Amino acid sequence: MKATLKEALPAMIPEYPVEIAGHHLKLRFDVNINKTKKGVKLQFVLEEVPKDPRQLQLMANEIGTELQEKFAAAGMQIVYDVENPYKNVIGFLLPLPSLANYIITKVFKGQSQEEPTELPSTEEPAQELPATELPPAEEEPMKEWIMRMAGLKK
Figure (cartoon, one colour):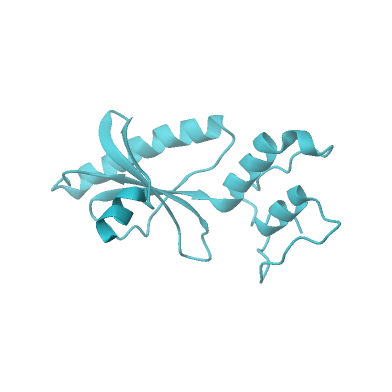
């Protein structure tokens, strides 16, 4: 039974072979468990870890530069994960407010007359997230609730 169930269920953490900045890597997606930095983790898994840490940092810089260009073109933010605990992973984080803003502006764009809320710049502090997650009020549209939960609107 266990073997059949295991075969029937897809992997809980999606992984994809990718080529980025001239490197062939496996990209694994996960969620960040740190409550102060909620978001989606992008983990580039190395088959072989360079012996020289400077080579690893060079790879991280090359990947980061390409990711910054691609995510900026989509109107999203990506940050280097300085707290990545794995030696064979180069990690980045797609912050939850950036993902939420993208979904609101691209997916739900036709459901509101309001202009989309811009992401706060890195120079200004982001609005504080609510202390507890509350369900949307009956009269509160889903777009406003998602933005409030993402810390983009009070």
